[in-house]
Amino acid sequence: MGKRVIIIGSGAGGLSSAILLAKKGYQVTVLEKNSTFGGRGSVFSAQGFQFDMGPSWYLMPDIFEHYFDLIGEDIKAHLTLKRLDPSYKIWFGEQKEPVAMTSDLQRDSIIFESYEPGVMKNIKIYLEEAAAKYKVSKNTFIYKPFNTVFDFIDRKTIFLWTKFSVISSFHKHIAHFVKHPILRKILQYPLVFLGTSPYKAPAVYSLMNHIDFEMGVYYPMGGMTKVFEALYRIALKNGVEFLFDTPVEKILVKEKVVTGVKTTQGQEYIADIVISNADYHHTEMNLLEKPNRQFSKRYWESRSLAPSGFIIYLGLKKQYDTLVHHNLYFTDKWKESFEAIFDHTELPENPSYYVCAPSKTDPTVAPEGCENLFVLVPTSTGLNLDDKTIKAYRDKTLSHLRQTMDLPGLEENIVYERIFTGHDFASMYNAFKGTALGLAQNLTQTAVFRPKTKSSKVANLYYVGANTNPGIGVPMCLISAQIVFKRIHGIRHGRPLDAYDTKF
Ligand SMILES: Cc1cc2nc3c(=O)[nH]c(=O)nc-3n(C[C@H](O)[C@H](O)[C@H](O)COP(=O)(O)OP(=O)(O)OC[C@H]3O[C@@H](n4cnc5c(N)ncnc54)[C@H](O)[C@@H]3O)c2cc1C
View (cartoon, rainbow, N blue to C red):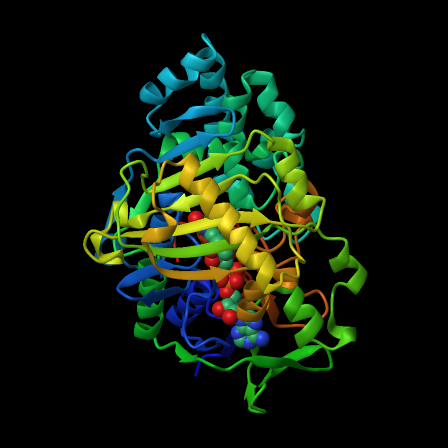
């Protein structure tokens, strides 16, 4: 009989670690507070519309493929991926005409050159460096458990640190290559995927531009939910047990060794190993007794959190030709807009925002002739919004959107609407101060500085997901699961806690 494992939470990290362990004979039970799987990757349907609640960009297809290969599944049997063309369209505060980016450098270079003649020479060098950073990082850095600072000083990682500009400011790094403010914005925006600001992130993250410009943007037909459905299906096939509507109230510990968990219904589940996929802060501060916590209240208060979000899910009885699948608006108050998110606690006055229209690619997510919109305004965390403020901000956002993206009659064509704010992130996922993504991925919260996947206080207690290594995003959570798996199974079976594993 394999060891008993309890996983708290069925987000990307919870599902993918459940599969890895179940395939090696561990008896895995996932306890989830909500009534379904997916966590931030949940989905809901209303009036014929299907809304992915969180992730909408399928990036880093190589990381997904690698995970599915590891677990012996053919990704093509589970997901039908479509490469988006254009990848996305951007509107700017300072000019009327939007630009469409394609992740095809030859086509994109026409746009770059129109803003700054001759800039492609520099952008090519910048992207070559970004590609090299991605390659080196993937093969060493992001699959590392970061037990100690010594993880920083193997040969390949030292190469990364010394050959490239890695820890200088991302913003300054870009300024070195491009001058035009619009081009700088285009190169800086992917940092929102990491929940940080270009003014606070390290230059190593220029690798995001390789992902964006050279690897392409994909969409799994049927919605991002298909990724989570696939993981759930594979977990069930491998014998993982799921208990939904089962919030964990306490992690049980005896003499510094984990013994199981207790749910809010008073039920105790005995386990040899507990993995928490719930937010790190929630796990530490609410599920563990004080002597078993690794971090103090002061530690958490001093963390930089990724933004929260003001999200409007809209079902429209009309389609709009100006929109593509991914649409972005970049404000002309660029630096101030990041300060409003990271340095103040208020709704941003002049925000950049994102509109996803998956019905442009996928007829199954909206009734015929209708449009499915996901409008996301990143905001600061810790907001306490009353109904009047929410209504006013919703009106302001939709009015701006109508004018900017040329959507006449937008408000009159709404047939379904739901608003989701930081308060909902906190109540639905136990997210600290309503953060949408977790701990921001700035220099002091990356790699060895990020809370670890293994507790230093309690034996056999592990953490998986966006708040631990390597970080934010669905592909990163799949890697997080591999790190946890190797810590648990690798140690027991003499496998090296090495970086990129090609065998399972
Ligand atoms: C709006 C938004 C847009 C995003 N866009 C993208 C994108 O385009 N591409 C991308 O790759 N990523 C995106 N992300 C990030 C990505 O969705 C997350 O990084 C990832 O899904 C987080 O997974 P996780 O494993 O950390 O678990 P989570 O999704 O955080 O799940 C944790 C689970 O634990 C459960 N839980 C919490 N407390 C308890 C408890 N006490 N007992 C039992 N269960 C509990 C929660 O209910 C939840 O189901 C986005 C996220 C959001 C919110």
